[in-house]
Image (tube, rainbow, N blue to C red; front, side, top):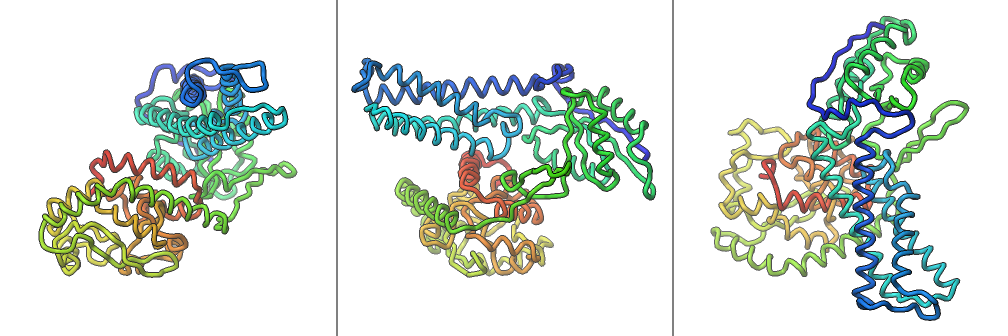
Amino acid sequence: MNPSVSLVDSPVESHKLTPTRLGTRPPWQRRYSRVVAAVDTAVVASAVFGAQVVWLGPDPVPVASAPVTYTAVSIGLAGAWLAALFLWGTRQPRVIGYGAAEYRLILAASVQMFGLVSIVAYLSNAELSRGYFLLSLPLGTAGLLCGRLLSRRWLAHRRAAGAMSTRVVLVGAADENERVAGELSRQPSAGLHVVGVLALSRAGSGPAWSDEEASALRECLATSGADSVLVSGGAVLQPADIRRIGWSLDSGRHHLIVAMNLIDVAGPRLHTRPVAGLPLVHVETPQFSATQRVLKRAFDIAGAGVLVLALAPVFAVLALLVRASGPGPVFFRQERVGQGGKHFGMLKFRSMIDGADARLQELLAEQGREGTPLFKIDNDPRITPVGRWLRKYSLDELPQLFNVLGGQMSLVGPRPQRDAEVEFYDDDAHRRLMVRPGMSGLWQVSGRSALAWDDAIRLDLFYVENWSLVGDIVILARTFKAVVAPGDTAH
């Protein structure tokens, strides 16, 4: 193999080049873990003691049939809750700061801890106030999730500036390195920052990982200040080569990461199981069980029902604005392709002039987009001034809450498309139709109109293959942010 070494210039904080002590986390991981621990402590204490004051009053109240007050119970409950968050690994480096696993662990730790406390109270005949517990659990859990979300936003901001990330050197074939580097650059919040590339090539069977490659890797690690090596693929590396790369790293200071040739598979579907020295990776097939369908449908009905009631005054105001914008109906109904290829009428507040659909093909031809997917028109002349404002803040989509209540759509899912767009689907893209289309989805909160067709399809397929209720909640939270601050990608 002939190695080709290159360094990637990027602004980084000076402390990131400080060597890590053996067996310890990098400084930024310890710092962020302390920040999250402080946020967790503040949230749990506020929820528990706040519930005590709201439900029982500010004065000390003794527990019936027990020689303690509720203040002592609150201290013990808060301590147990924080211990559960630690024991469930909610602040472990493998889950913290990215992905939905962190949120799932917080929910599991909170619910199971309260279940354990309830069992202990029942077995000890302690007459604890039910309202006190029923108030502290949802308040504290919601506060913990919000606290982690805000902490994560701060971390993402720091990572976008090149700080508080794992500095990695890519090792592999040139095309593999380029593919992995491109994916990581699009997701800076993942916290893997490429600072060096070691491109390998092998003629024929070629020799195994040699001293020359090992020396080049050590030099690249020392020069770049990297703390991890990411093997980007197996085109030129054999299993024995990857093992030798691991042996050449400083134990506790450098870490080895291996990118598998599996794309768009979320963590909960992956399980590793070493068998006879082989690190086998089990990939669960997507499951669309009856329980999952019922849970998602219940979430849709409850969420859409609450939103329709809460936004009734907003509906009235928007209807008046649309009526005043020009001739035509207040609501616009357009046929879209839904779950299983069934057609339905998707509702919107009218944002265009009456009869706008008749001019679509003409405008597509003028802009050279005829025969392409994603029928988007730049500076669309059919949009009314009121409609432009409605679209920017996605307010024209609100009537789709009635589609959700009617069962044609979901709050979160792949965006429903027209027949002409579905004609562009290949076999893979047809998997979008396995679930109900959504008012919002992964691609809407990942770039909206700025995304290319292939990227939008890939994100939708990732959602279909890896659905979870926690994932839906995260997408809805990101949707709210995108609506409040739409940015330049909203059209």
